[in-house]
Image: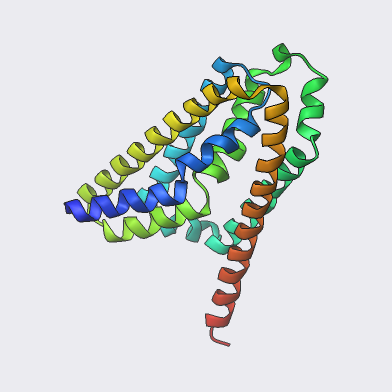
Length: 215
């Protein structure tokens, strides 16, 4: 059984890597044009999917990536490139242009589920940082009880994340069309920088792995 200090450390580590307050405004920009109910569906589905992803890595650790032959570095690079495309669309209003061609009714259930999976659940919530942290924490909580406690810590973090996303939805009502347009562009730039950092970190990990490999 993990000590109180270990559990507090695990909670803090995941809280910093997931960053619920930082996700709230990004979620706001990604779901522009959706109704309150649709935003709630995306937030709930994204949080649940992220929990499942992190729980799987907590239970199986590095073995999951090892079996697939995928390194964390490669995962960071792939996630960063995909996230950069979303940022590009936000900055240049490509997403908004597509939304303007359709009514709110055209936002189908499939569309909502797709956004919940990518980019919300992966890589924004359960991104490379959170997955890496989960794998490392699972190594320190190796017993069955320890892993069960770690899953509880993950659940607490994802519940907090879900609540933050709900607050973001309420904030949207006070911004208006102009406010959302400005915020979306600003967050697009932030997302682009975040995506670039994912790629840089992934490249560093890959180079370190290559240099550490005996020739």
